[in-house]
Image (cartoon, rainbow, N blue to C red; front, top):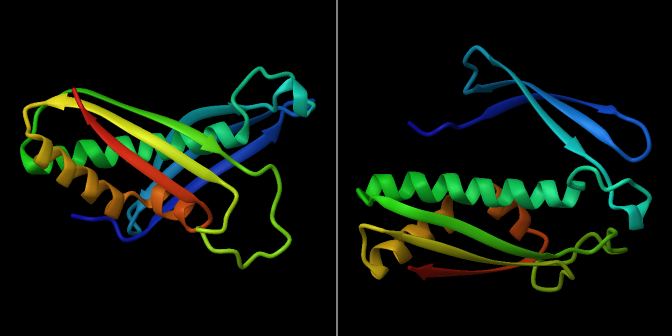
Length: 160
């Protein structure tokens, strides 16, 4: 069963300086009762941007969410294909602008941001099967789709 809508309840509090702490309080899907959570995510800016560099900055957290979403989609699609995974790693290099462009109607091809990722995978499947899984991940990863609206994303798959 595929989820149509999800509801997230998060609260972010200033921790001094440029640091913040987010408490992920609940998650619910398709109007189901919320599942209470107590996940904590810390964030800080690097020293060069006025922070203390004690936690990932917001852009690193966004890229971590990108990787985690791609990872979950890859695992889900590999399982659906009946493929056993023995290794799965996603390495992403992000080239992100540090400001919003003056014209908000720029296409992804014209955007100055760019993500380049490589999925390293091994397991019980052929190159063709893993390439098909990768294509389905591209088609189903919400975070990948959201980021692709504003930047170029280049991906590769390496079978070990």
